[in-house]
Structures are given as structure tokens and as C-alpha cells.
Amino acid sequence: MKNYFKNKSILITGGTGSFGKAFVNYLISKKIHLKKIIVYSRDEFKQFEMAKEYPVEKYPFMRYFLGDVRDKDRLDRALNGVDFVIHAAALKQVPSAEYNPIEFIKTNILGAQNIIETSLDNGVKKVIALSTDKAASPINLYGATKLCSDKLFVAANNIKGNKNILFSVIRYGNVMGSRGSVIPFFMNIKGKSFFPITDSRMTRFNISLFEATQLVAWSIKNLKGGEILVPKIPSYRIIDVAHAVCDKTKKKFVGIRPGEKIHEEMITSSDSQDTYDFGSHFAIIAPNFVNNYKKNKLKKVKAGFSYNSGDNTEFLTISEIKKLINKI
Image (cartoon, rainbow, N blue to C red; front, side):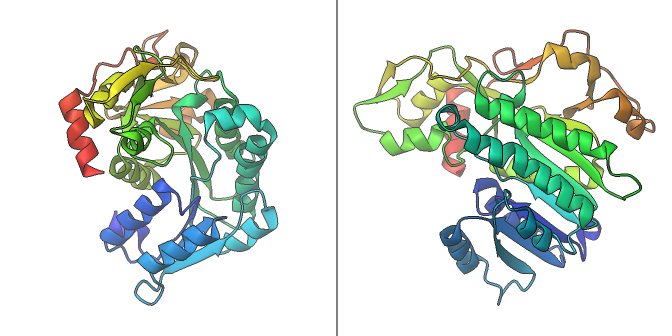
């Protein structure tokens, strides 16, 4: 892995977010001799804070590039000389998307297309877009924008011509402890009057930030182009998370918010015809990209298969959730 990344330049959109910071930390901890790590984000203060943690004086390969994925000209400048792009920038809050749909479309869809076009124009070698379980059979606008983004990145492999570039997508579930997720929310109100629980049946997929960074690093080296990679990860029940954070705090059922599901999916039954099982992960591969895997022994899932957080074969117990929370 070290040799693969040696003397390469990586740009991370949304680089000051939860994943971006964790991925930068992962790369630095592996002592990989990178040419550049470019943190691209629109939050000036977060860039200032991150630059204090990883100063250029100590880490001369670090670059902090203020910009928005909506700004194609700025992206074009930032991507000059870049080998790999990790696209993590997105607007993510489900209720906000229902109220401000056009803003989510500008960032999550038009911003994705800007990444594609500027990557093609600048000789980028590999682009990985981070997606979400909400993109599978979406019922909210956020999920719909991410599904559209996924389609754009997969289809980008059709328009690359003779350029040496690959586009792929990684779709995973809730990142434990990430900004805006349920665990920090419960932690902030622990000991107060009650934990609001939308529904006692509600489940979600779970992946740690460290697992997400490992998955992305592995994918950069191993992607073939045109696939949506889906890791096999455990689920948890939201009610169990509440008990793990504070068993004494009262739990109050408040009902599902607009755009929410009881269970999330990462692979729908309609996707099963194009889904393959690789042991540690699944891959949704459109028929025109299956030849990219012709050297691999492909194992297609059964017709009608779906990967659903409520039907998952692995669930975290309350004690396991507590241990994971203590590591955050």
C-alpha cells in the first residue's frame, strides 16, 4: 500500500469533515511518502483548525485549499497535478434537504458533475465518491441527490475516452460518531429529560471512521471502475444506542421524521441482478463494466437479494455499542 501511494497527490473534497480529517490522519499515521495531501473545503475556520493540527511546517506535503465543489473554476485549479480524488463533500441532513432542496441539488449533483469534468480535464487517475445507504431506493431528497451522484460517477467511465482515469463509488451506512449522527446527538443530551426515539423498530448500518478510512484506502488501489462498492458491516437498533449511551435517561417515542425509513438499504432487490459477492464486500457492477472484473471469479448474489439493516445477519449488542462509543 505504501509503495502504491508513494509520491502521489491526493485531494479530499469535504476534507475538514469527519471523514476527511480521519483519512488525513490515517495517511499520516501510515508514514506514506505522499507528494501532496490537499484538503479542499469551504469552511475557513475548520481549515484554520486543521492546519494547526497538521501544520505545513511539520507536514510539508499538506495543502489547504479553500473552495466549494459548486465552483468549477476553483476545482480546476485545485486538481492540477492530482492523482487521486476522494469526493466526500456533501450536504447531508435529511430534514434540511426537504426544506432546501435546490441547495442539496447544487452541491450533491451539480458539484459531483464538476468533480467529474475537472478530473477528466486535469489527468486525475482515480476518483472515489463516497455515498450513503440513503441512496438505495431513496424516499427523501438527500438520498435522491446521492443516488443521482452515484449514477453520474458510474456513467463517467463511459465518457473518459482514451484518458487513463477510473471512477467508482463507495456506499456505506452511518459513520459512528460523525457530525450530525445519532451518537453525538444522544451524548449531548445525556442526563436531560429524555432521549427522543423515532420508532422502537428503527435500525441503521454502522461503520467506524477508522473502518471507513481503511475501506477507502483499499479501494483506491483495487477499484476497477464503474462499480458501487458496499462493505459488509453490522447493524444496530436505535433504541439500543440510547441504552448504551445512558440507560437511566428516559426514552420517548416521537415518531418518524419526514424522509426517514424504519430500516435502511444498501442494496435493493432490483440491484440484485447486477450485484456480486466478494466475501468482505458486495459490488454493484453495471453490465457494461463487468468485463473490468473478467480476471476475477465473480459470484453473483441470488435473484431478489437485498442488503437491509433490519434483515442484517450481524447486529451489535448494547455492550458492543458501549465499547465502540468509548473508542470515539
